[in-house]
Amino acid sequence: MEIFGRFRRLTAVQRNTFIACFLGWSLDAFDFFILVFCVSALATQFHAKVSEVSEGIFWTLAMRPVGAFLFGMMADKFGRRPTLMVDIIAYSVFELASAFAPSLKIFLITRALFGIAMGGEWGVGAALAFETLPAEGRGFFSGLLQEGYVVGYLIAAVVYGTLFPFIGWRGMFVIGALPAFLVIYIRTKVDESPAWLQGKVESRGERRLGKDIWPHAGIFVFLVVLMFAFNSFSHGTQDLYPTFLQKNLQLTPKTVSFIAIVYNLGALLGGILFGSLSERIGRRRAIVIAALLSIPVIPLWAYSKTVPLLALGGFLMQFMVQGAWGVIPAHLNELSPAAVRGTLPGFAYQLGNFVASRNAVIQAKVTESRYGGSYPPVLAWTVLLVASLVAIVSWSGRERRGADLSKTT
Picture 1 (tube, rainbow, N blue to C red):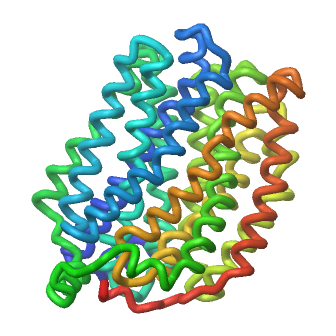
Picture 2 (picture 1 turned 180 degrees about the vertical axis):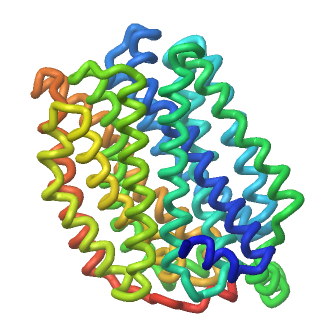
């Protein structure tokens, strides 16, 4: 009921903008997580190891900073709205190209190109959303917007469980091209950011990225380190978890899909709850609480043997992981300098993602070489280390809860 109440208080323009940004991020994540569910199938198709196929995850994540920088620059110069439309078309095209890859090498190239487009969506969409939405309830909308990522994962889980046995991995990537139709909605229903329009008039096109960012180099470096910790937290618990369920526990696509749906529902609830909670107790405190509460869940999440316990463990783990993440869209935009808000939050996010981008490859290789293919020890150590890092880095920084985001100069 709270969700509907908050949406009713928005204007039509604000509502349409948020929906477009939410769907853009959700469908971007959907296209990414299709690969997570198809790692084993791709390994079989191309006669490769899981660690070799997981290089596709690495290249997607590694190229995201490039997209965040390029599309962010476009958003600051040409506007949030047209840049978002170009970005959505780009990631849909490269997703479709992945479906027709004749070899693993070509597939990895398409994933790298997809990563560029994927990297641009979050920063541009978040800037458009928060420059349009009112300051009141920003924490709630931050949690809801970030959980578009979870909704994308959830959609991927449903599609995998229902269609994969019939269409295979190539068909999954063909379906991943459908987000291109979202551009029609943005073109007809969404207005440009009022803050960007005002900033364009005031600055008369004289902005210089380096000049604007340099005085804020300290906060930029901090955000990169923070996002390294956060991306290690999320990808360390998500990217190879379906592979663990498939390889170690021999679960069917339908069962893996069911568990993924359950833990993504937990993630969705966690993001909204902690995002809203951050309005009252502060951004940093909400992040730290969520991150540390993930540690006691490790045994249930990584070492359970039955489907109900695995689903419960997954629900609780992602409730905490995405609970911490739910604070991030508002937190990063509040901490970023106004003149480069279209570029800096997304660029810092994706640069941190780049540093964490080999997480899945490292996890797979350690599992293969040291634990004989058993994933639980590697998953457990990952959570213990990165959850602690998220809490420490978050608490060491500052926050600007409720900062004015109505201007871009």
